[in-house]
Length: 143
Image 1 (cartoon, rainbow, N blue to C red):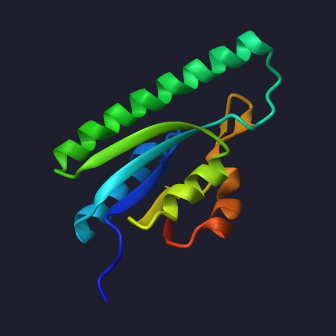
Image 2 (cartoon, rainbow, N blue to C red):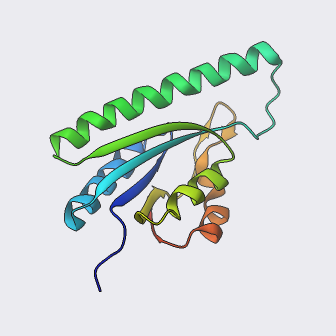
Image 3 (spheres, helix red, strand yellow):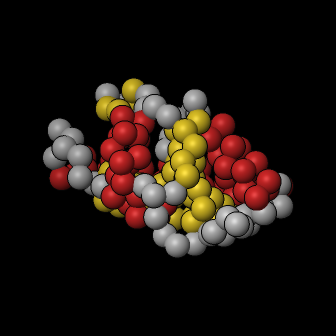
Protein backbone atom coordinates (compact mmCIF):
# COMPACT_ATOMS: atom_id res chain seq x y z
CA UNK A 1 0.00 0.00 0.00
CA UNK A 2 1.50 3.38 -0.98
CA UNK A 3 2.30 5.84 1.76
CA UNK A 4 -0.38 8.47 2.25
CA UNK A 5 0.42 12.17 2.40
CA UNK A 6 2.70 14.41 0.40
CA UNK A 7 4.53 16.19 3.21
CA UNK A 8 7.14 15.45 5.82
CA UNK A 9 6.55 17.94 8.64
CA UNK A 10 9.65 19.10 10.50
CA UNK A 11 9.24 20.90 13.82
CA UNK A 12 12.11 23.38 14.14
CA UNK A 13 13.61 25.31 17.01
CA UNK A 14 16.74 27.35 17.65
CA UNK A 15 19.19 24.70 18.84
CA UNK A 16 22.53 23.42 17.66
CA UNK A 17 20.73 20.29 16.41
CA UNK A 18 18.40 22.24 14.09
CA UNK A 19 20.48 21.59 10.97
CA UNK A 20 20.77 17.88 11.76
CA UNK A 21 17.00 17.64 12.26
CA UNK A 22 16.32 19.49 9.03
CA UNK A 23 18.84 17.45 7.03
CA UNK A 24 17.15 14.26 8.20
CA UNK A 25 13.76 15.62 7.06
CA UNK A 26 15.24 16.51 3.66
CA UNK A 27 16.76 13.04 3.25
CA UNK A 28 13.48 11.38 4.24
CA UNK A 29 11.51 13.56 1.81
CA UNK A 30 13.98 12.80 -0.97
CA UNK A 31 13.77 9.02 -0.39
CA UNK A 32 9.97 9.11 -0.37
CA UNK A 33 9.47 11.74 -3.09
CA UNK A 34 7.72 14.12 -0.69
CA UNK A 35 7.87 17.83 0.09
CA UNK A 36 8.85 19.28 3.47
CA UNK A 37 6.70 21.57 5.61
CA UNK A 38 8.73 23.34 8.28
CA UNK A 39 6.97 24.70 11.34
CA UNK A 40 8.42 26.95 14.02
CA UNK A 41 6.12 27.45 17.00
CA UNK A 42 6.56 30.42 19.30
CA UNK A 43 5.31 29.18 22.66
CA UNK A 44 2.87 31.85 23.81
CA UNK A 45 1.31 29.74 26.57
CA UNK A 46 4.41 29.47 28.73
CA UNK A 47 4.80 31.61 31.81
CA UNK A 48 7.84 33.82 31.52
CA UNK A 49 8.86 36.36 34.17
CA UNK A 50 8.53 39.27 31.73
CA UNK A 51 6.61 42.50 31.86
CA UNK A 52 4.66 43.55 28.76
CA UNK A 53 7.60 45.29 27.05
CA UNK A 54 9.93 42.35 27.72
CA UNK A 55 7.28 39.94 26.42
CA UNK A 56 6.94 41.92 23.17
CA UNK A 57 10.73 41.99 22.76
CA UNK A 58 10.90 38.23 23.37
CA UNK A 59 8.16 37.59 20.77
CA UNK A 60 9.89 39.83 18.20
CA UNK A 61 13.20 38.04 18.83
CA UNK A 62 11.58 34.62 18.41
CA UNK A 63 9.87 35.77 15.20
CA UNK A 64 13.19 37.01 13.80
CA UNK A 65 15.04 33.82 14.78
CA UNK A 66 12.30 31.59 13.38
CA UNK A 67 12.13 33.50 10.11
CA UNK A 68 15.91 33.59 9.74
CA UNK A 69 16.22 29.85 10.33
CA UNK A 70 13.38 28.98 7.97
CA UNK A 71 14.88 31.14 5.23
CA UNK A 72 18.24 29.42 5.73
CA UNK A 73 16.55 26.02 5.56
CA UNK A 74 14.74 27.12 2.39
CA UNK A 75 18.15 27.52 0.79
CA UNK A 76 19.21 24.05 1.96
CA UNK A 77 16.01 22.54 0.53
CA UNK A 78 16.50 24.34 -2.78
CA UNK A 79 20.03 22.95 -3.03
CA UNK A 80 18.59 19.44 -2.53
CA UNK A 81 15.82 20.18 -5.05
CA UNK A 82 13.15 19.53 -2.40
CA UNK A 83 9.98 21.61 -2.25
CA UNK A 84 9.89 23.39 1.12
CA UNK A 85 7.20 25.56 2.64
CA UNK A 86 7.25 26.93 6.14
CA UNK A 87 5.30 28.78 8.80
CA UNK A 88 6.15 30.63 11.97
CA UNK A 89 3.16 30.30 14.29
CA UNK A 90 2.10 31.10 17.82
CA UNK A 91 0.49 29.07 20.58
CA UNK A 92 0.98 25.80 22.40
CA UNK A 93 3.73 23.82 20.61
CA UNK A 94 2.15 20.49 21.59
CA UNK A 95 -1.18 21.37 19.99
CA UNK A 96 0.28 23.10 16.95
CA UNK A 97 2.77 20.34 16.11
CA UNK A 98 0.21 17.57 16.67
CA UNK A 99 -2.34 19.43 14.55
CA UNK A 100 0.06 19.74 11.62
CA UNK A 101 1.40 16.20 11.97
CA UNK A 102 -2.15 14.80 11.91
CA UNK A 103 -3.23 16.56 8.72
CA UNK A 104 -4.35 14.17 5.98
CA UNK A 105 -1.61 15.34 3.62
CA UNK A 106 1.22 14.54 6.08
CA UNK A 107 3.05 11.21 6.10
CA UNK A 108 5.74 11.81 8.72
CA UNK A 109 6.86 14.13 11.55
CA UNK A 110 10.55 14.82 12.21
CA UNK A 111 11.63 16.64 15.37
CA UNK A 112 14.38 16.78 17.96
CA UNK A 113 14.45 14.09 20.62
CA UNK A 114 15.29 16.36 23.52
CA UNK A 115 15.50 20.02 24.45
CA UNK A 116 18.44 22.12 25.44
CA UNK A 117 18.81 24.84 27.99
CA UNK A 118 18.53 28.21 26.28
CA UNK A 119 17.78 31.52 27.95
CA UNK A 120 17.01 29.66 31.20
CA UNK A 121 14.16 27.61 29.75
CA UNK A 122 13.69 24.32 27.99
CA UNK A 123 12.73 24.42 24.36
CA UNK A 124 10.63 21.97 22.40
CA UNK A 125 12.39 18.78 23.49
CA UNK A 126 10.87 18.66 26.97
CA UNK A 127 7.45 18.41 25.32
CA UNK A 128 8.29 15.38 23.16
CA UNK A 129 6.36 12.76 25.19
CA UNK A 130 3.24 14.91 25.18
CA UNK A 131 3.52 15.59 21.44
CA UNK A 132 3.98 11.88 20.73
CA UNK A 133 0.82 11.05 22.65
CA UNK A 134 -1.21 13.22 20.24
CA UNK A 135 0.34 12.29 16.87
CA UNK A 136 -1.15 9.58 14.65
CA UNK A 137 1.54 9.59 11.94
CA UNK A 138 5.04 8.14 11.92
CA UNK A 139 7.52 10.17 13.95
CA UNK A 140 11.31 10.27 13.82
CA UNK A 141 13.15 11.79 16.78
CA UNK A 142 16.59 13.06 15.80
CA UNK A 143 19.37 13.04 18.40
